[in-house]
Length: 117
Image (cartoon, rainbow, N blue to C red; front, top):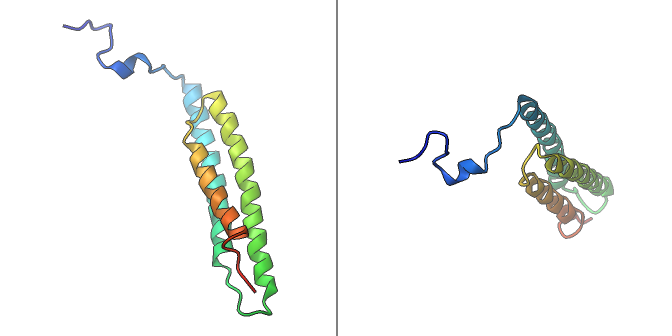
């Protein structure tokens, strides 16, 4: 028989009571990171959508490179914010994976998958 004071699950010992202030901070940090990731995803998709019409269309290549570079820079900012938010304990570490995935997609478009003229 278990005591009503003692938690019954092994994970219940590790759960920390979160204050309302921490819950609000977590929600705001998640919202900020989500919005930044959406903008980065949009820029990356723009870069992948660029398809030169022919060998004379260097402007499309430049636009693709600019969109990929902007996405990569925004990913660096988002990764830095994720690090700050994780260190503060407001968000979980899986936010790093989203930033890493978007960074890989942007770097691939800038290098291996760059549109040729």
